[in-house]
Length: 441
Ligand SMILES: Nc1ncnc2c1ncn2[C@@H]1O[C@H](COP(=O)(O)OP(=O)(O)O)[C@@H](O)[C@H]1O
Ligand SMILES: [Mg+2]
Image 1 (cartoon, helix red, strand yellow):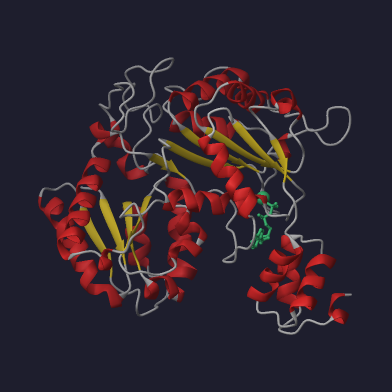
Image 2: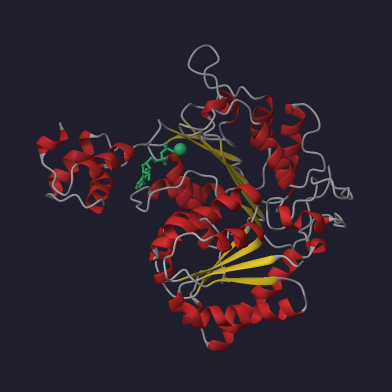
């Protein structure tokens, strides 16, 4: 059975859906794939079993991005969360297609996924023939994605070799995870070393979902830009208390990178060690090391000691220009005391130190504690204290949250809460529309 492509769209974009599906039909006739259209989004029905079934079998999901799509309650509330979950857990490849202009960059999950056209320009703004060309290219890209022998080449030595067949490990499939339904089709992939034309490989979506608002942070975003460009910056760490806005800053910058075609990144992977409330607390980097080694092409991710695996991962990361984001590593650091800030996991420590030593790309880390292991690598692995929001940015945030009041009042409130982003969000949500000095106490 050919792999399924799930196409999700608003009924208002029916015409565009027809055009997208039209190109895919050529592949369908060649038995390369099977298209499943999500016809009832507009109706806003409940999640229906057919859709679940289609999603469960989909290797690729195409999302036709437009204003009606992004404002659909069903899409936002049900379909997208479900898709992102499957993307994360099972490697479903999610590809947004920008059909109509809309402020999609403001939607964090969307800004963090690379869409088509890559420059983010809406198809409806292009000349008809140009738009058709984009759709034809996309169809070919999907064909290549689904062809096991077209899996992007892994990095070269030290671990490059012919992949073992059917082990379920070793050759990362092009759609990121090890998509259940395509698992059997990956055999035969041969490692051929670095290929400059290989498509960029993204494995994203693990950072905590940021809210829809974003204020301030211009200097930090510029710092990230500079770190990416600077060959001498190998690891950049942001340090701050919880809720100051570390993850949000990095998510935002990832969104900008996405909008910029990922600049010269060849591979991008994000990971979050931060466990929110209900989930188990992370006590080792094993899951991360396993996953990342697999993603970067290690033939046997579980082999060796944690330290070996960390070193191996660093070698793989270095092999091509890579953007690696490690969010919230504090659960893996020693608490204040004699070992304060040291990374407890030998694999993660080895990875960070090795990357600090040499890394043509960039590794971004966020944490609540400075990382003691990196202290001796100051020039190549700077650790920046992320400051709280400026009073102006904090006031702006309150304003955007719908809080009313004079500028001076909002500025005062922002100051009073120390520019702490999370506190301001909670304040903004709890004060209703009107702010008064009294409501702050
Ligand atoms: N620059 C910002 N603009 C708007 N909201 C922000 C900003 N930074 C953080 N927030 C909000 O504050 C909360 C905490 O931010 P988060 O990035 O999770 O903090 P940290 O990672 O430092 O714990 C989130 O709800 C986020 O949406
Ligand atoms: Mg965080």
